[in-house]
Image 1 (cartoon, helix red, strand yellow):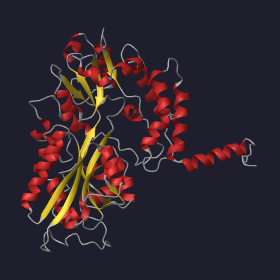
Image 2: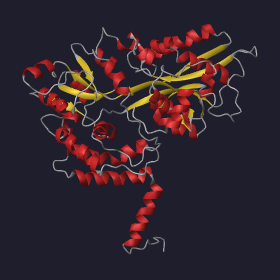
Image 3: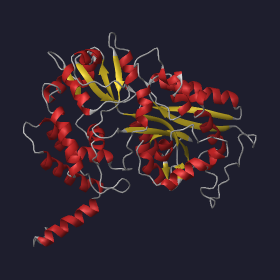
Image 4: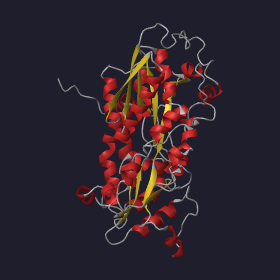
Length: 455
């Protein structure tokens, strides 16, 4: 993952957590599990597909069998949004899965307690066993707030019947000989090759998330500051260059789906039916695509304009600040992140584990099943650009939706004008106070005086 977190945080995480906060009054070794002689009851909140939930249930049962003084009960949510609502309700489970994008809200609300010292005192080895940037992603104030569990990068799924690299090479089209890397020209050639009567070449969602890998790869930035942003920066010169090159391909009607076609049938449905060559997505698509009879698919990284970058989400296991038993809950976290437990959940096919040991094992690679190059996910994890922690991200996507839609689908566009409109709309959401002050200054400079409508 590409992150601009302070190096000092990394040193704390990798070198050892024991000295991270010497003034902390919490004793991570206190209250051993079952020491009081009373049974401890804990709740663990997880979310996922039925196969994942079944694996979580098995993992919880093994812990309960091995720890007679503790009873962990699994509480499940359908998805991240539902899990977020559970946390917002105030009834916080002792241990819970959370998305990295929710970390700020969780920490500021005091819902969790840092895990670094608790796990360090239990002998958890952070060295080479976990992806370094995944640890950084769940860190605030030089403390590990939650333990990284999964890291899912955006990759490019492709239909191997429509995107036939051997046939493309025979036609002397640009093809990458490396399954772990391809450039934008090779990607564009694949999209062109896959587009034929009845099929389209590629689909990218008209969202900030959909555009982000191309912007970052082309040397641009989405935000003006990686830690405390005030606006989007689609008008920056480097970002404009990346957008121009990307949209030149994605606006070609022969290659991409029109709004009318998307209203009639989703891009994913068309991909499943063999009528779309490529679609960007995450690891969670794998089990769904495996169920489609006759569909042959594989994955490539996101294409490279200048550098290898992508976007993605990181999930983590967090411990509640007011857990019924901090010690017992920490013991359960150690059990949940063990190689055996993570492998059990990984085998369901949805998870890209943050544990290097499991990510490099057959539990994840599953070489006898599609996709043939599952290692693309592992390789792409290191290229994830971690966005700023914003509570307003859903509101931001909503605010810029119409302009992004125009960027993709309007018949005639001026990219610089649309980019300026997107940046302006973003300021009001990301930093409304600064936006209001700037508007007031502009009114003052233009000689306008705010009026009191009530007078």
